[in-house]
Image (cartoon, rainbow, N blue to C red):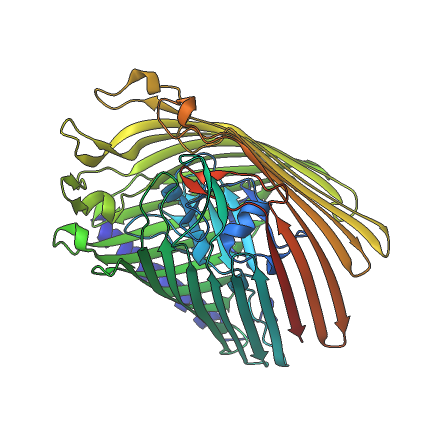
Length: 636
């Protein structure tokens, strides 16, 4: 019955839009101006959102998204060594509860539920927005802690014969990164081509705390390369279509951990293809958008049989500008997932997801903006938790605003959770979706022309039920069960300050701090009661980052300082096995030169300037002091 309702809803939605198009008859134009922002910008009224590209952050000195977020956000980036798997945690939530969205499409794997940040090259990104807190009503399953939204710039249909950008980096441990971006456009067509190639041996020295000796990292080379192609076509004054293709190959050697005495030659190869096509059409007081995406991934571990996943995602939405400062978006999403994994015991699972969603925003008294959103998802005909969201932004004064948000969120189990079979370990087909209920309140203070100084402080609380956890039974066989109830709460503070002393000298400062208390509120049957109230593993209580950039003429000096508090690695919070807190300092200097259509950026950076020993994940050491030189050339 629910599936029939969703199907009928899609037909009504499509027919309504077609009828609206017939009424327009191409006589009422929007003058080619896109008055509709992204879903997050338009309806994330009370969400804490940090947009990195608008700050004094040098993207060209980074290699991948993981490097960028480690230096310029207070997020918990969980890295299995240099070149290894790197995932994100928002507000104490797990990596599978914090999504990465590319052009609005979730990159979370249907097999393990996470996305590897180290496999997202920085030259394939123009925009990065960090959305904190529950977002399932807007973006679907998996957005319990927050989401990372990445995209490229929307191409503009204007006469531009040719643009070229070349990026070259060299650094310690034989690291090289080469990138090229080419674009061309006219009034009816736009095209961008991007490519990159990255290589590093990562044979850095480190102090092994187990052997208590200086050793060199082995079997840790990385080789990644890929292309992104983005053609766009302007059909007429009201409609256009944009196509984006991203293909990439990743070969990663897996080094031994610090506690292993034997050398290893393990290797993992990942290949993926990602394609999305977006059609938009302006109609009377509204816009129709249809998007179809296909995500293919193949993983080969040590030349074993490949693990293959496919996701086909289709979404249609209608946006309306209504009277009395009201906006409305309604839509439907259909996702089909499949996987072929050798460890699924001969099962080739597939899954159908169908969702209806609606978002409404209204402005009251020119000061209070209210956004309401809701989503209902069916998985193979079975309902998931209904997820509504309410956000209120009260602009109390021109420079002071209060925000409040209440939301539900959810995450469906992964294929690994449901179907894994390896030895005596197995998945659990009876798992329930994880469910979250969150509240947050924040305030924003701005001062000076063009927000010269601004501070945002947010307090949050997120209670998660049925958290899926793999645990051993009495026979020592591991199996996932819905056992954990966790309470994630804390405070976030961030601020920016920019000042121009004169036309040649300017200063930009940005800082982020997070206090997170994440505790287990319920234990499994026959569990250890001493675990109640303990901090969840790999969730630092304190985390912060500070960046100061001083620009004089064409020179810029930047200092980046980050701090990560201690992290427990066992449920009983045994301090003997905890990861000690660590602090990292990066210092860079950059020179910019431009003449006519030619522009050069030359930068040199010292990473971990004080040569500190640290681990972001237990037994996975990170490098000490190392260097990076980058040159960026632009012709436009």
